Image 1 (tube, helix red, strand yellow):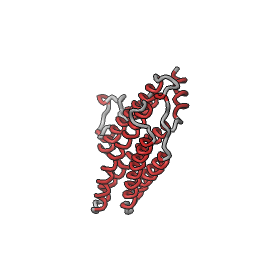
Image 2 (tube, one colour):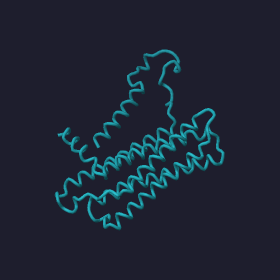
Image 3 (tube, rainbow, N blue to C red):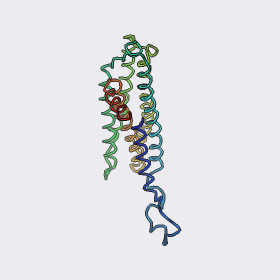
Image 4 (spheres, rainbow, N blue to C red):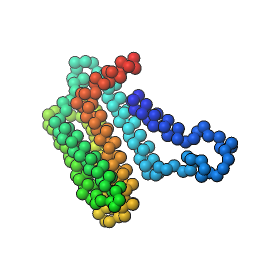
Length: 236
């Protein structure tokens, strides 16, 4: 959580440094166009809105992960509640297809920015298919765990596994809605200039979801424990 807040503070500090906070407009002379940085923001409002949304989603997952470690720490060692749920092998498949989905969207973004723009319908369809495959593999992993007796209410570790992966899956489904709209507009022959921003925002969102999933993947595989111990030692 502290690491996430440090990243947000660094981004916020960089943005504030670009706003000419130390300027003294009552002492400056000349037309407004002669002073850089005094006009409207160069970033599109949609990109700013997506950045704010991603910051909120990132804070949500950071809090959930922090709550997971805090909850597991108060469980007595050696008890059933402290036992870690085995990670299904399907999680490797989920990671692979989500990476392919992100790569396909990145390629679509690169192709549509070229002059002249390339046809990106195949890239968008591939990204959507891989994303649907990710959701399907997650549901199959849940089914395997339930058949093995690892239910939601069995232990805190089980509950957090379903909570974290479920929350991430819901965000993937939300991204699929936006991706589906962009794909439908491309198939209807929408002008390239109107589609560049939509595909760019989808690609940024997908890269963010991939980053979050990699963090969750390391968490459920047990690889994050050593990093947490190092962070606690530094804080102490």
